[in-house]
Image (cartoon, rainbow, N blue to C red; front, top):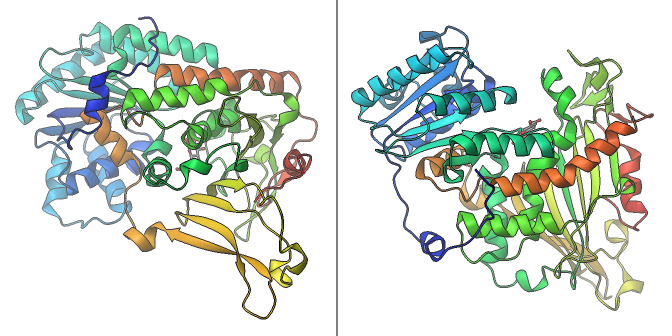
Length: 511
Ligand code: BG6
């Protein structure tokens, strides 16, 4: 099927104001169900939806993987749900929910296995009244995505004239532009684009969705959200964890593919996009794609890569990347990336967007900060208070995506006393204080939206290809010039020095 540009119809605009709907009956079929994601995120999320009364009554889950499991699978899912917290182990709802969780063992390239799966789903349709509704979830290793999609098509499971059939595809969606295009073609040969939900779990995070609410549900920020007032933007996605035993995956991925091409680019698009005409899939995706397409090709001097050596994280000694399990001892894979983007459009021309993402950094922190220009004249510069207030600091809006979720605004205030001394202070909004802590892991919202057929918080093929178009030349340039200085930052540090130099040469510094 040919690629379709994202277009906005009057129905799209109407749908955005439609009241909440309840999903139609369906079976969620998870491929790769023996993996960590199903136990840690997907089943706990489905159960949270059940607890909140948001699942359809006619509902079931089928886990599909190669290992023969059955009862063991249900036990494992129970453990995962309980570990997620906020669940009473004796709750009859949990028992009833788990009774609707099934398992099917098969190899993903085995035609016979798909026939049996089809029969199983039809039997479950009769048992639970799910009426042919399907939400397939591809949580396998990415090399199986195309095969599974093709087999679903070949076995007549990709369409139904009775109910909606949809497919969620996990990341990574391709490993460069060409492979992403190929996968898009393979998927769109079987499923129409409206059936496809490419997931990025960052879009399920409340704080990420809140970027849009902050910008577009308030009147006071949008007028200053542009090149006339903003000096630059910083996006930091640092993690204190390492690669968590995922050596073979990470060796092929690296920080650019693993988090920049998807999570970080999504954050950037939410910060930079124009107001969409409605909160619905097509208008939102259109605005996001416009941002990515306006980003200038990145020059090598605007990129920094790093790899962690041994160090100390949270007071404990940890090994360097090259000593992690199943990692090449001479690996050139980057565990840190910092980039300077230029968005050449009316709103952002001349405002650099600095982004950085890294593993084994000093702390876990995902934050976006919008740094504003200094006032035109520094009236109080000779009377800055001493100590921690000893420099004039620009206004900054910082959005803490995680942890300690919230938003703060830094501004100057007069220090009490007989002189006109100023000091930066913060106005702070904290999610937990304002709304209480939520047990949602982000997948609740996305699973529910996919069941409802709402693709607003999912990636469209145009978007995936636009971000890969930006990242692929960088990957190629890095691959052709192996790094000479790896490892170049200690685990538990703030990343390589060269990342500081990237901003320092513009007279700026990371927050
Ligand atoms: C995943 C990456 O997509 O996102 C991981 O593969 C990373 O390497 C994770 O750790 C970060 O997600 P979160 O929600 O913990 O910020």
